[in-house]
Length: 128
Length: 216
Ligand SMILES: C[S@@+](CC[C@H](N)C(=O)[O-])C[C@H]1O[C@@H](n2cnc3c(N)ncnc32)[C@H](O)[C@@H]1O
Image (cartoon, rainbow over all chains, first blue to last red; front, side):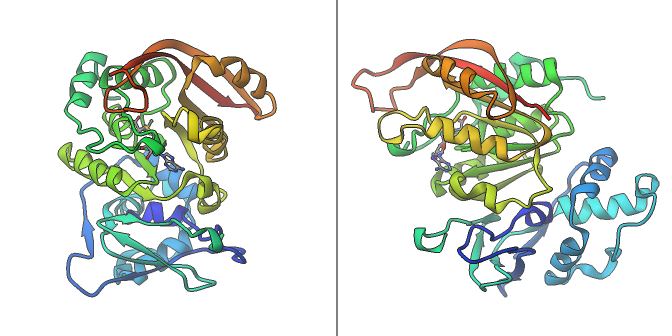
């Protein structure tokens, strides 16, 4: 699961949950829980994503993974022309991948497991 | 801009993908054949430019034929969603076989998908070959379509396959869904022998390739 995908997901499907965002991320303690892939950098695409992404949620996700060191805390002005910033955004949104762990509903604490990179967001009938 | 891959070449690549190993009849698991998938995706990109540089939702992705093909034609990000864990495992191996890093997978029921997506972050393009909604799943084809439309951004476009017998119904529904609906092609689709829902080894059914564009 990329952090771009994490940035999209909410737990609003659960009964009683009003915002359900952002989901916490907890990684299991073994190694290999987070992977970094190489993805081709497309500045126009990343600029377009930055307009849609919830930046604070991305920062929090990076922090949950202990990777926040070089992610700027806010979107910089004129980011379209700031290649260094776009490359960082690209790295965090597209290249960091959560392999095994849990996504956690911020309101109920309900865990959604991530296994082999795939989040399981099925909910039982009595939960929705 | 990169040159668009030829349709024939795309088809050859898609032929290398694994299909369902044990198709589940209740989930209507039959993969889109490489030939049809290549025709669909090539048209989507060559005629409308709706894949290259786009975010794509592959709804009911199965083994991710449509998702992988989308990336081969330049999609920047694909999210494949399916309810079936085994299908998703096959997807993972297909995606790895092509060494693609643009596809993410999500294990869930499409029925709750609109609630799982944050409001502002919708998709540019949806591609799907939904269950035809036969027998046990009456209306599932239409439900997939409505859900796909809810996951689209304001100017988004959805491409889908539906039985030709439902053509009038979708044309009638289009205005209330605020979409411009067009049948791009009529196909003969052979439901394969693996899909033993029918007694014969395979049956040809008539299927429409649709384009639904959001009107705002
Ligand atoms: C006809 S197959 C198409 C698979 C793939 N998109 C392709 O083109 O080869 C339909 C897919 O929808 C999935 N499916 C059926 N019901 C679903 C549901 N309620 N939520 C998510 N996926 C579902 C099935 O598991 C199956 O993979």
